[in-house]
Length: 177
Image 1: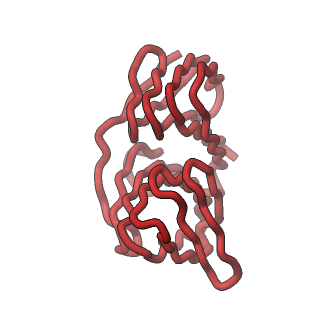
Image 2: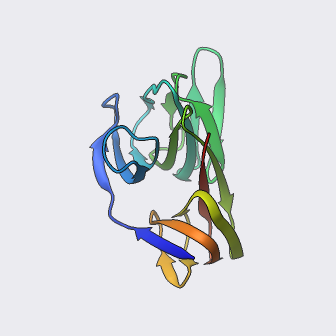
């Protein structure tokens, strides 16, 4: 069992230039990603980037909710609830309650599937013996194999891992197709 903690995140513009994202971890480390986790500060209503061939997930970390709208639907995304969608869908994001922060999960569907679960405060035993498992701190503090995982920190875990949390964290699994 092991946990590699990521605390420092490189900032970069969104593909559409409408905001800034902070890359947490990605595979591979260089070139076009096959999967990627990032954080974004969303200060204003804006369009989300269209990313063909990429399955996307969002967990709203701060902000009561956001509304994602396209020509077919309007979707309310609440805080600490995972929402998944295909990257080909062009969404405009509206922030009725003001600025927000979100966790972004992306995978190239030809290579990987992803699943995101938001887990609450208690002790967890996570089986990360297969596939790629990543934990991201969302609220309060989480301890992974004795290492503290604070808000916006991430841990890539392997093996059977003990996790204790006083708040909430996201558990993301990337599975090769």
